[in-house]
Image (cartoon, rainbow, N blue to C red):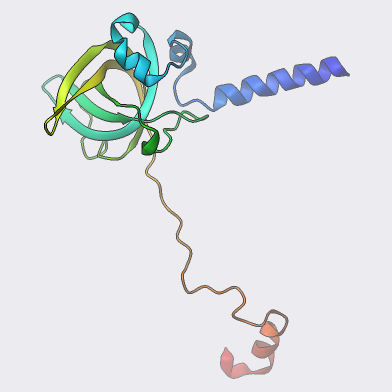
Length: 177
């Protein structure tokens, strides 16, 4: 009986772990284990050519003649590889994607998860401050759907009608209909 439970548990863990990812399994096997982003940024030469999985919030999308450049504010990834809050950011990175990506779709503040090959780092100016960016060539990009916030009706009051007597009023007074 214990063997059956162990086998069932192992199958469930692999099914749930594999189904929670937005990046394909083949690219996940090629990727290196998660590394602290600050270390990856500081030692980018050490990781050249390695595949990494990163996520964050889009800052800017620029289209060139043969590629699209996306600047991203890094955010740590959660269990489903969805970027967490911007408050936990450790830096920025640049994604190079061959082809055209529409800047209206890949717009500012959209969440993105990308698997890509590290191609180095570059220093760019943000206002008057020089800031390092990690550069990656994308292999796979997942753009998260925009949050459709649920806002309850501000005028809904569940106890507005006296619950036990609610239907009584409508049954006995036809002018309420």
